[in-house]
Length: 458
Image 1 (cartoon, rainbow, N blue to C red):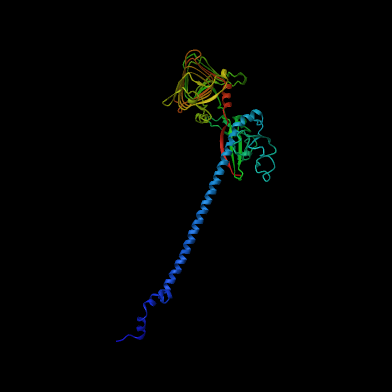
Image 2 (cartoon, helix red, strand yellow):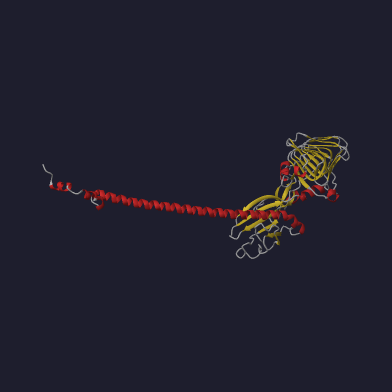
């Protein structure tokens, strides 16, 4: 049986025509191939677009990070420059006071230190002067001086006494911002108080004692326009309120008549008489040569000192480690031990002073010194010892003098173990004489210390 004619014709088609059907677009198979080619083109274009976006994003992120790093670097450079300027100002306050450019009695005296003669923070206004100080007032008694560290790239730094109005906050809770200067010191009637800032007006002038706080504001601005302003509060370390030639939180034992404790002030010109001995506990032994005003000895006293705050205030860098002052001293477990040490020149050798810090117990013999001696532990002294200034001890004190004159302290001693359960002993040839001159001189020699620090956004 034969096939239909059309089937016969299809079978008889040449093989080359069958192979070229896709190319000629015949049939559904040709349409499928052309559709796949379109999808591949679209996919390629989308992929290329995505890769382009990713590449551009990476370039943008990289450029942004570069700019951020550059800005951070410029900001840090400006910040360090401003902080360096504030440190220069802190170091120069004493010179400005001694020359009259600043005055403890005139809070409106102000000094600007500038890095270039072309910079004047008091000229014009903020629109005409890139370095204009927005806090400047024509009422200031102003002096402009040049920097002594020209390589530091700051613009200017201003020194002026701090007040509530200048600080912008109410310190004493009065409800208004006062123009009276702010001081740093002690409340005379608050036992065991830490030094703090207070407005020196009203009753505070009689209930508190301290020194003025200076507001130091520094600006650093680089040619690209990046600027940084920092403000620090600085003040002298206030002298603690002394009530006795020797104060001990612990009980005190006086070993014999060779012990002399005198509260009458050796510095006659500015006499500040004190009690002889004072303790939060008992005072026992021979009181024959113990004298003072208003009393020779006061046991069970309610007076207290915040030794933690005082010792912290006098720690390095405001003092020198004892091993740097006396290199021959021996390091022992828990502290130091030494003989024939020089802890500061005696007055006849130049009347200089320094603060020495012993970070632990201290055992001395046949030594001398002048300044402020800080002992973060017990203090034991034997043989001969001459010291001019203040001795601060976090622990018990054991003085056992021998020979002539034995142990002599011209100044004052503040001591006490943390729990107040030990005994300070005075035995042999021991003389403790109140001398306000040497104590005041040592604190006046201390550098101004930083109380606070902040970055300002302007």
